[in-house]
Length: 328
Image 1 (cartoon, rainbow, N blue to C red):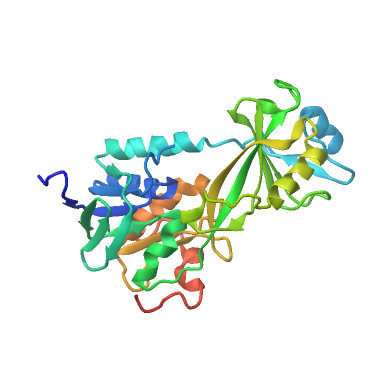
Image 2 (image 1 turned 120 degrees about the vertical axis):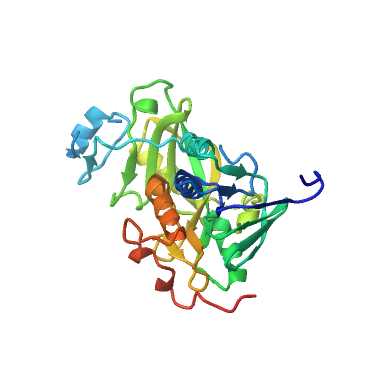
C-alpha cells in the first residue's frame, strides 16, 4: 500500500470525470454492468405529483391558484402529470446505488491531465488512475479538460441567479407549497424563460428564476465584483409584481448555479473524434437534469462500444464546425 504522502495509483475498467447527475448516472450504469468504475469529482461534498392537460383562462386559473394572475388575452395549460425533482436527493440516491454496486467515488480531486491511449491515464491532485475507457461529464469544466485533447467545444458556462421570494402572508393558500410549478411562455408582460417552483426548499420562499444568465469562468463563479448589476433580478421583480402578487417583489435569497450551454442548446453525447475510448457528455444547457437516467445509460453504452439504445445523431460533436484541432 502506498504511503499517505504518495499519490493514489489504481487501474479500473472505466473512469468517469464529474460526479454531477449525468456523470453519476453514467457511473451507475457502468457499475450495474459489473465494470469496476471510478467516479472523480474535483469539489468536496459533491452530494449536496399531481390528470390530463387542461387549458385555463385567467379567471379559472385565479380560482384554482389564487397566487397566479394573468392578464387580458393570456391563458395557461395545466399538466397534472408534472412535478418537482429534488436535485440533492436524486444525486445522493444514484451515488449511493453506484457505491452499492461496487463503484468508487473520490471527491476533492481535481483532474490535472488526461493522457489518451488504449489504456488512458488520468492524473489528479491526489492520484494517478488508468482505465481502457473514460467518460467526461464535468459540466462547466469540460471545455478546459478536452482542449489539450485537441477539441475546442463551443461550450459557454453561464452564471445563473437562483432567486427565492417571500410570501407576503406566510402560509397563504395563494402561494408557497400550494402553488404549482410553472413556465412563462409568450406572456405580454414577461419574456420567455421565467419559471417557478413551490416553496419546498426554504419555508415560505417560492423559487422564481430566469432561464438565462451571464457568461462566466467556472473558476470565478463565486467572485462577483461589488456593484455588479443584476438585470435578471430586476426583470424577475417586475414579473413578480405583474403575475405573482402574493410574493414580495424583492428576493429574500439569491443563490447561484452554473449552466453550460451549446450554441443550439442541445446536448453533446459523443465519442471523441480521434480517441474513441473517450466519451463526452456536455452542454446540458440548463435542461438536462430530468433526462439523466437515459443520458447516463447512453454514455455507458458509448463507452462500451455498443450501439446506443436511443439515437444520438442530434448530439454529435461534429455538428459544430472546426471543433477538432491539434492537441496542445
